[in-house]
Length: 322
Ligand code: MTE
Image (cartoon, rainbow, N blue to C red; front, side, top):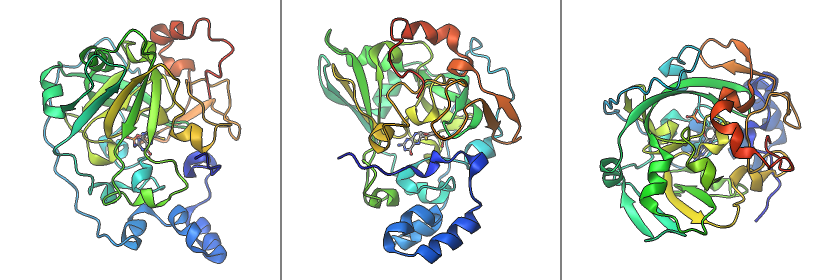
């Protein structure tokens, strides 16, 4: 069902109203329908009857760094990259670390479905035996106007495509992420089209940059950042990088993903980074680096044009940048 509600992050943080002002204003408005959208995530967790679990210990995870991908800017401090999150299943604020610790990541498997030689479920540990892990430092640009630079550990998405053996007719991949009513208080915000889904073309999925991450900063990926496995598509706005993936479906139909269902006029299928194409409500010309808060110019394709721009030859009539 298509519900026209704006996601909480559709105000860039440069324009955001201080939380205290928002809360005071919303308190005046009152009404149960406004609670989930306005109360900080930890408080939402309590409101929905849970007690936020303590932080989960991470396991060390080492892999050789691939020197080909140079970020050209300092790494974001780990503390900043792992505490300023978008993970709507756990709440609409950036402060979801504690509620996200309820995410159950073991056992974990991924359902390979649709147009593949042999639809099946693959346990994460078996998947990891079939691939070679490497570390890649990528820039990440959120559509809201903030950015980070992260040493991810994972493997090319092309490897998963190879293992899945798509049929000749497959054109798109659809990623479905976990939607667990018991542990994810954000799912009670039933105007959002859960589960969170995202999609890419097969050509994008097999581009060398497309990466599935299972770790960051030399450890397994923290729950708030999308444990145990998430996508990283560094030339696209961050919302394309689906977290906590449970299903990858191959199809010949272009999917309509989560944010496109929420607000198609603002978020489309392609969502490639371009500083010259403003969001309908703010400029995309600059980005704020998490950690230093420095403002720097945004680059087309997030600076990865040499790898990806040819994917879009012949698609000039598409809305490639929103
Ligand atoms: N994946 C799921 N399942 N749920 C989400 O809310 N948010 C997206 C993306 N993947 C999101 C998601 C958005 S908007 C961004 S910018 C990145 O995750 C944020 O990743 P980070 O919290 O690790 O920085």
